[in-house]
Image 1 (cartoon, rainbow, N blue to C red):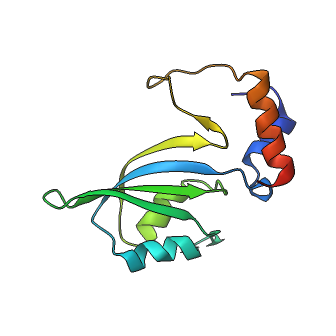
Image 2 (image 1 turned 90 degrees about the horizontal axis):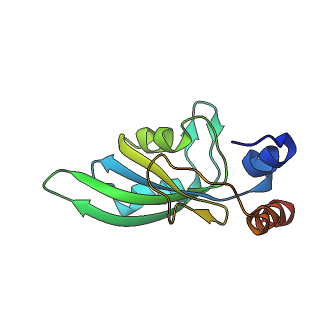
Length: 131
């Protein structure tokens, strides 16, 4: 939450390419080829996504689920869920782990905190340099 609309736009507009990293628990276990499709970009109903960084974390073959880390710089509505669903893997749980240089470290579920002046400066620098 912010009261600074310009700063919010810097953080969320795709042209500034601020990375957002998600951890997704998905139904099914994708092949390396299917994960490569995410790395190249996926065709969604509102157009192609930008290439994503993908890291396979773990699989539970007995439950037919796996955990995948996905980093994108866009932020379309429900984009991560739609990307996995386009490949036939519905998202069961999704958590944003990182936003630019910010992480969830030290926060419990539902908690929030104010950014430090240093963190704000880092985020502005990321947006201005396009990472």
